[in-house]
Image (tube, rainbow, N blue to C red; front, side, top):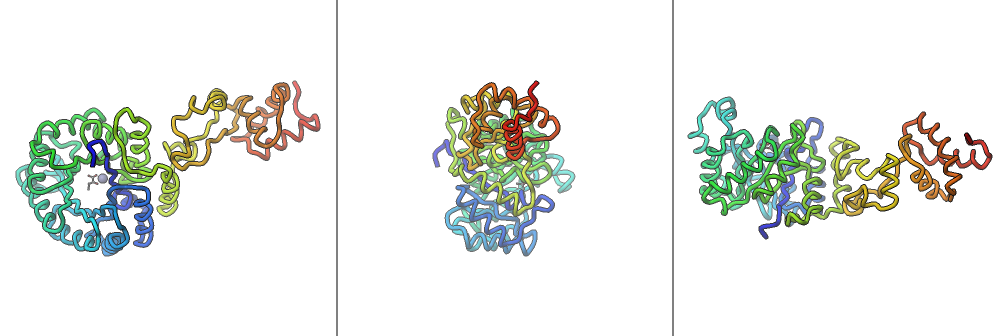
Length: 390
Ligand code: KIV
Ligand code: ZN
């Protein structure tokens, strides 16, 4: 792996599937895993095998079906969990165990009634135990976002020494600001003596709408794996959205990073996930929302029709989206109206459009959007000289 490659760790089937109502059965999970492999993700987090027999079954089936991508299973820092994860991964060509424990004082005290010293020991033990089953062990320091950096560095150094090959620094509660998350990663790079022996992973939640910004801040400061989900699904407000981070890195080649994602598959897989998880995508969602390539205000439409780059930084084809749309509303202008008439085969001159535009506005003020049928009606009225000529 080149030092500029950012690995994409997809957790749609684990963190994404934790969303109420998004649960998938094993057949649906395998179908999605196959699509994720086609998409080009590097690691698929297939589930949390100890959590239910169904999830064990899903991880096992995915392990049997996937040929090249690393298959990861989650576990707590509990021997039994790790053994069950390893058993579910038995058929995986490239198995990874993802194990870990909360490291913030809040988790140490409230969840574990423990102390920093004992948690560090448990972290080391779980990594050592997992290494009995695979060489590919990822450690997560849950709530790393609110963990004291000095202590976090000690834990990370110890787990790498114990055999962790990836160290996940989750902002579990979505609390960090991008500069704070970036500084945390930089702190680990500068204060963990064996950090070059592991890949640093960012796992950010979206409670303050910062999951994407934080993951990118992580990369800019040394993380080389991003944990993310299709459509940004995940606990509470969700996780970092895969399509967003991938396109940020692609649209900013100056940063020098790349991923192995086939970006033309982003919209098709987003639709598949929305359908099988029965979780519609918000229309204004970046990259995959139905309005991501729609233009409706007159000023934007006029610029876009002269040169698409005035209002679009991504070609919709590049992300597998439908062609850009010129939507007609009461905020639209004459050039958009002429353009839409032209698409229906009516080539009106400037004077025609000036006249038609007045009737169009009257109609548009009464309804949300002007559709093809409305335009045909306007064209017919114009022909019959029934349109309003002020
Ligand atoms: O958000 C989180 O901390 C997690 C871990 C289990 C990796 O999902
Ligand atoms: Zn998470």
